[in-house]
Length: 277
Image (cartoon, rainbow, N blue to C red; front, side):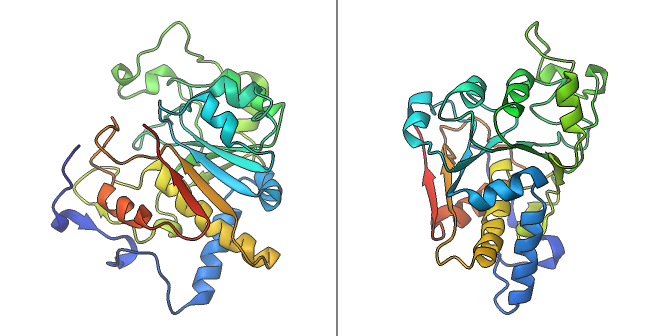
């Protein structure tokens, strides 16, 4: 596991040097941030989210099997999947999963034209197209809208070599969806929900992990939902397969793992972390 850079290389966005997003004295700011988080979600998912009982964020963890998913999923869940997500056929076709609303998050690769999980990189385009026929499908792009890049736009093609099974051309119905303001939105890695996140100033593109960024966004969005519905208890959030130990292969040093571990060490009410392995 990479070592955490020396604290002197940390930069706190917005000048915040705290280690927690608190807003103790300004409930108006909290309300505004919660509303901003909710409205940053694709329009097609805002109504289904108000009707959901749980949000399940599913990591790309190979130890998650479909049997575990069959046990876990319920008809009132909303699912969040990341980049080149696992078990694509299951989520697109299984009776327990195909009818659930889904949020897909595709992270921009540095400051290139590419997003992980979309052409010309490894992708689940066929499964995505099937998902659009079953249930509400919303898409968030990290930092920039999808720009329909070509293989020649890939700055590091050796990182993800093209194989015969790669889908490079997006079918017309999905092309239309990827250009839709109703189905798609852009999520900045500097959104106010992670304003307290200490990035490493000496590492290009240092930012929260995809899982933590979406966790914070949805944690804030559920506060808005709770206020809107005048509910006594917040919407449940389950984080499935999010590990931070040495069994995890991808520990990029641009993510502040120590901060994220501390933030998740004691989850707030209604948040459950189900680790694997």
